[in-house]
Length: 326
Image (cartoon, rainbow, N blue to C red; front, side, top):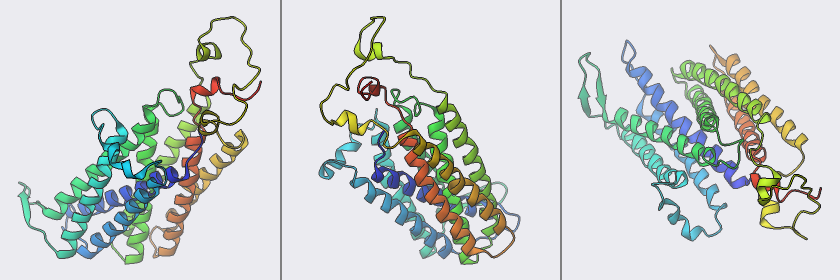
């Protein structure tokens, strides 16, 4: 499939924003359940949520470049009962709204207690909004991954691993950015977020490389016979079916050769996982904010390449018919 750069930026930017939001909520919960019950300042969570909102907004902006008629974008939410795309379109503004409220209550210092548990711990408004925002973010990861996992005609996508990898890579990049943000802010959460980011990055690398290995063994269920509806024992294609280019021959074919995909797979493995993991590990126990920022930037560049490979490696079944001249 031909990757659209607007979709590359859409999925990676909102993925980092969602992951950052989940990281902030996880860090707040980590401090709340701590023995001393200490917490960070409201400004820390408010500013981090604003950063997540900016990333989500940039992802939404990138999505408009993928629309043939942006004026009709609202119609994409109409089929929410059956369409994962519609569910994603509904959840993105929901996540943005919850992130805004999460930032607002922290900034204003509104923390009324909503529920008190038997162990003396309490659930306040900021924590409740945080749980709602994190839950919506995780649901959004699932919806985004299912948009591609439900396409049965592209067997490289039609797998639960597509959803798993969207989730893991979004969380890894979000926690890495959160660790860099905490380090630059001088937060006590720096080490906790760094360890979590390192673990998620390694786990994301393992799941993504497993999917690459799986996709290398995938074989199409359809054949040239089923593509044209003929059962003749000897079928040989002698022309592409078109004298010139068409939508089928430009949108469903991978640009570049297989060597390009292999080269970018190596690149995203190094830039998206290996190098950030090394930088995060080197940052543990020290005040290395700039090193963590470098890890976050390197990881994002690697994930852009990963998303390109994800789309380019998808082989649509229609290519059996519209393949190049034999």
